[in-house]
Image 1 (cartoon, rainbow, N blue to C red):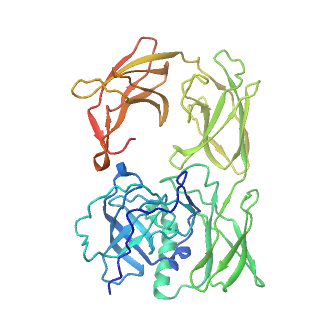
Image 2: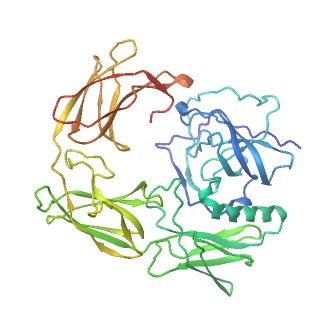
Image 3: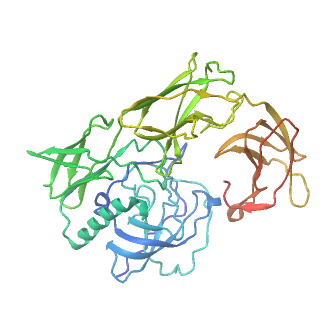
Length: 474
């Protein structure tokens, strides 16, 4: 039996929003989504007509090849269409070839399960033609799977979580799943964006559940997961404990439904500290210097946006506190790019053997040796000329000078295609000119491609040509 097509209006006017917002709560286990989802399956993205140049004002259709279905799909269904949250701030981007566990919903703009804020994007709609195989007269079923829907990548790094989710969903499909309480405990999971680095699970945390005259306990496994199966339907208080760790969330009230589960995730930290001092190039205490700490992942590289900073006092001393256990790097201009107030090439604390990694045990306070600053870098201006491929000067083009992943300097060309950039000596920059061109579906970024340079004292005059085109600005 074919379900009617969930049509999504091409324009919605539901009031004006001063800004866009999609506030997702922490994602829970599969059992927290299965009862509410209209369809649950594992599948691979076979098609997406997402256009990065159109922003959120686009109706996007994504086709999945279904590998295994757990709910809402007949066994013969092998293809499924998804709307990733068109015209909302909870718009999700799916890439062809990705394999995902999908929790799909009906009803177009229904709030995703873990969303506290979602904005509807009004205004002029930028249309797209229907994809090949999509019959306008007899359209297929289109489900909704925006951000916060519980949908997740099937990554090998998440094998423990995925194994537990898939086991539960197979039981759910077979009708053998029992009411339960389950979740995960992480260690300062909000200190950084972990991407493909597995979230730091916390093992051996005692999870205590109390309610209706029942008290049960279980410990988290090596990945931080726990399960209390065969719970009675009702409300319970769930509390984690593992000295010297603390959680700012406190105990959680959880309701166990007749089907599915009550879920409670926790984040804990055993506050650690790294302290030391900074000396200038003459070995004198360096006051008012920004000192940064970067959290390192399992691969030894900095975790994206996992940084904290503080300033040295008048004696050149600093303290970096509220740190979880793990490995860190400390230094100057490791995260933020050098600027005229802190004109130093990136400088890491390191031992004589070159090692720059600092390991903290849970709750450990560690004193490290002094960081010695290099001489401050001089500030210079470099000249930049930007032209179109036919030789015409390019007006209104932004020129970016990046240090690492961060914009450190910028300028805009005048009517003659000329601009100036302020740069620091001995600092490695990547310079590129970019400008949006075209409109609608033909909108692109004209760019020069990146030029690497390390300024010295000699004058620099760059000549850049906007010879490349891309759909995305980065």
